[in-house]
Image 1: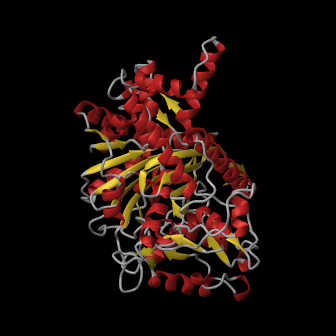
Image 2: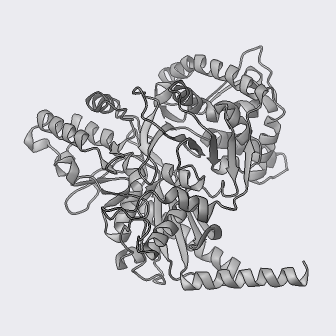
Image 3: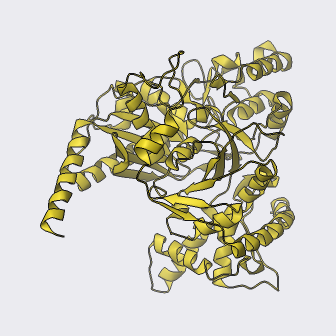
Length: 560
């Protein structure tokens, strides 16, 4: 390094340290399915990541329901925050004590129900549960829009249908992000993207659909005796906010939950809490019509911003919104990269047993590179990643399977390609429905750890969607960075006193797409993979076998 370059690097490091000390930062925290992440950015230039932290956690399967213990929420949050503070000190020589804004994000949907005293009534029921089929079907018929099994209203109504003892005591229902935000700020609010996974949203009013709320309350009155009814729905759900809205500030109690050392003081403003779908859209700059994104982790889902309403109701498609409230079609699959990760762990253990210990990322990299050597159709192999039920595939429960015929070409390359294709299999089934609706896409953006190995998963996803797929520098940071950006946006709106981004009703208008384009992604480097014809044809052949083989998967659920 030259003297001039060294001097410039030193100045940048000094500037970052001062930014952290002054609190000109935005902190994003996201509760993913297997990892809680924290991400600190420069609030004036959110593309600049200053520090990161993380903590591993895992759901439990108890009484035939997927759940997380709420104690683990707080120990995990504190561990991820402490890890971020330590990373800031390693990188910049300073420890953050305050922030310009904070945002909380988490996996969407599910059911957290509280009584009048704020006590949890039943263990947290996550998005992964598929026990709500009867309620979801009834509500879909009542509303005329698809109500997925994982939505909060489906969980609530299933509890009503089943006559669960806790139902009369319910006074507040929220998501995981809404719960954490409530405990940190005292505010029972929710970003509109996350709220759209609780109950249908009217994009015109940027609030819960009033007509459908009325229909549900009428159903509630008719079905349940007074002693077993939940209160009116509007009083149970968190208040809806849009990107840029003020969403409260850190309380003294919240500060102690975030940082038990007592270093962080109360008073830091928060942006609206959002779901991982919305933060994924922000992280990939996919909030404008004709854009979309794919987020791959424990689950995998695609979000496509709509230019017009869909013509029909499809059980494969959810209607949700961007963090600004614009309508989005979502293809959500309960099962993403977990089974691929399990196989990588097996290969890693084999290498260690053979005396060639390799890091986990190296195992993935080897498998991904080998997949490029496989046949375009994966040599006739099939991989099903269904650890949990998969509504799009018609499965109430999952059984991971790897299947081949005597005529299949069983090589490591084909095995690895089949596993990667399997991650995208159910997603592709749902996207075919969207394509049949005539929804046009200019480009899909992808993010998540699956895309860290350049040019492999991205290339196969382009084949699965038959559309260009872009990956940016922040693909691995994912939603924690996305919610940090939303926190920085809320700070920017507040700093301008909403003078140029307000409506007559006092709410921020849809300035988020412009903010992302101008402030966050103006200089972003994108790697774009166009679909290769041979891969497109190969994946189509794989998907035909995949669809036919679902009968084998269903038989495994019945038999095992």
